[in-house]
Image 1 (tube, rainbow, N blue to C red):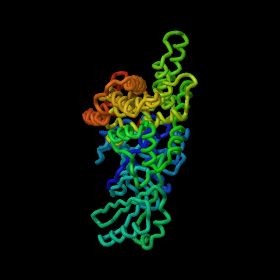
Image 2 (image 1 turned 90 degrees about the vertical axis):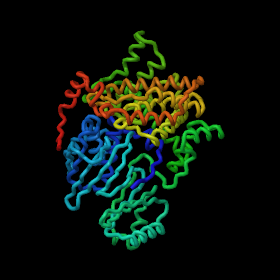
Image 3 (image 1 turned 45 degrees about the horizontal axis):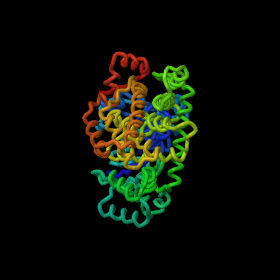
Image 4 (image 1 turned 135 degrees about the vertical axis):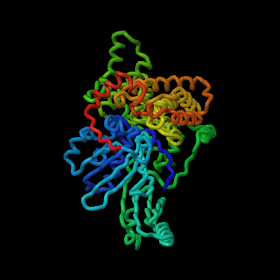
Length: 533
């Protein structure tokens, strides 16, 4: 079963608002856990999770927060709740257990979760899900039926027994006659059993319940509500689908990149322009608070790096360095990353591992007392639409494409946002994004001790300064040469060529230096993994 997916600025690019080291690990796992909790009501007694022994999660599920995220979702703890950090205590007080097994599984996606859920009074539930980057996920199997559940629709799953072709036609006719604003997907097994998956932008529970005769042939029914920030609408009529179409519209209508972003997200989600801008302004304030919190100093035991963002101002006051936009970028980017590493509240933009880039670059560009919330919100929207094209063509998951898809993508987004903030055109913003992404191709992901700290902090700072320089070049009229969409294609080809040891496994690069392996032992000696060959 395949359903089309149109990226959203709030679902796919800027967000989630979360705690934890990694959006593709922590946030995606939390959303998968939340789906299971909805399906379980939640009286399950055991959750058994299998990771493939050759994939990223086998080595990173503890250090990068998959275990925390999944448990939080199963327990009903929100990603923004400080108590999610204490998930082990809450799990100990719950009525279910979680077991992790590293073994061979059929799905070789680097972020695949094969999950068996056991209940005291009914058949077990088997789910296969994948994390696709930036907190996005997809449930691809539900009790052996192919599905495509991404958490952005109200979903009704109807399991029907022994349905023939005539029955199936009648079911579809009945649903079409009784329901509005929905999409219908179906999957059938060799025994004639049928899964009907009804997706909608609103709850259809009462309408489905009132369809005569449907309950009699339904063996099992699951109803799921969206777990993503904004629900999808079924009928989407986008103002543009390619970069060229967007830039033609900008040229013909005299539109800025943020205005194009609002047009796109309104068509994608059904939200009006005021709601979109207000939602982005809320995100901007969370990032602003992360910078302020980080600059006061953060504390957390289980991390490699302590507070360093405060060192910049100290060095400036002592005359060791001059205060420049570059030194401010270093301080602000570090502050956000330190809040992330201390389990504070951050915005993944586009990922938790690259969360320091966009906020660090944009807020560092402000002059004293210059903060304008609406103007900053529009800059973030410009960054968001720039990221939509990456989400549509490739991924933000370093497990698939290395750090180029995380901090490289963030640099492209930040460069576009800086051009928007400084009054540049949509064409200049996209040129800046192209140059920034060109500069990041081939960047590997080699987290030391599977913590998203080293060399992640340095790569965030590198990306933020790359964004600044690329925006200056674009505003001055430098030639990007390679169009932005072609650079995204090139990034995908480079990512597919990268060895998997250099894609967030901790099995290559700096992670495998003598110091790196020593730090791994220091920070992960508590790990107990059951391996079944």
